[in-house]
Length: 194
Length: 235
Image (cartoon, rainbow over all chains, first blue to last red; front, top):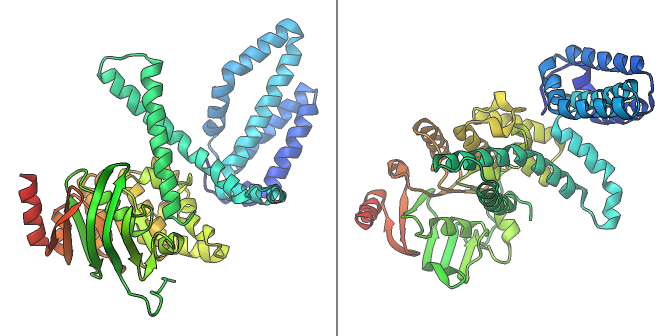
C-alpha cells in the first residue's frame, strides 16, 4: 500500500518504475552469483532508506515468505547444493523487495492508469481496459474488507462456542461476500458506472 | 459544475402511482407524491419500504407499476441521465467505497466522466478539505473510522455536484459523535435532499416528512405531525 513521500523513487514515473522492475527482475533471474544478488538486496534496502520507507515494511513482506524460503533452501541443499538454494532464495528476496519498493512508492491509481494504457490493444478483442483496471482495484480494496468480515464471523462463532469449524466460517463468509458484491454493484451503478 | 434542470421539464421529483414488488411481495403500494421541497425525510419501521423508495429516485430500482421522474426524466428509460443528476449515499459506506485509498475513491466518479486530470486533482483536494479528510488523501480506506468512511462516501458523491442528494439511512452504523458530524453535513447541503432515516432528532430541520408503513404513505406533512403518526405506529 502506497506510503506518501517526495523521494526520487516517489517522483519517478510509474512507467519507469514498472519498466525497471521488469528489467531488474529478468536480470536477477539470470544472475548466478550469490555475491551479486546480495549486493542487489543491499542496494534495495538502501533504496528503502533513501525513500524514507521504514525497513520493517519491507521485512514484513519477507517474514510472510520465510517458511517458503526455508523450504526452498532445505530442498535445494538436499537435492542439489546449499549454494543453489541460497541463490534461489536471494533471487526471490530481491524480486519481492523490488516489487515492494514500487508498490510503496506508487499510487494505485498511477499503476492502474499504466496498466490501462498497456491494455489498450486488448480493446480490439472486446476487452475494456478501464473495466479490467477497476476490477483489479476493487480486488485490492476488498481483500482487507473480506478479512475483516471473516474475523467478525470467527468471533461470533467463538462467542457461540464454536472454536474451529471451516464450514461455520466459510458458509456465512460466502453469503456476506455475495451480499457485499451485490451492494457494490448497486453503488457502482449509482456512481455512474452502468 | 452542477447540472441544471433542463428547460420545459417539470422540476423536482415526481413519483406517480408507484407500486414495486420483489417477486410476489409488494414493498411499495400506490405511492404518489411530488417532491419539490429542499429537505424531505422518509421515515418508517424496518421493512416499511424506505430503502426501496430512496432507490426509486435515482433509478437503482425501477417501479413494477407507475412512473418516477426527476426533472421530467423517466428513471426507467433515462436511468443513466437521472443518476448523473441524483447522488446516492448508502447505509454501509464499505459497500460504496471501491478504491483502496481515499483520494482515489473520490476521483473515481470524475474519472468515469473523463474530466481532465488537473481538474480532478483540484476538485478532489477541495472536497477532501470540505469534509475534513484532507490529511487522509493517501490513507487506506479500510483503515478509516466508521464516521470518516461515511464522510468519504458523501464526499465521493458530492464531488460530482449532483442536483439532488438521496441518502439511505446514512447514520445507522455511526456513533453519536459521527452521527452529529454527518447530520451537520447533510443539513448544510445546498442541493435538495431526500433522506430515509430512523433518526427522529434531526427531523425538525426538514420541511416535509413522509411516513411509510407496509409500503404505503400513512402521513405526509410537517415533522411534528409526521413524527406523531410514526410514534403511534410504533406503539
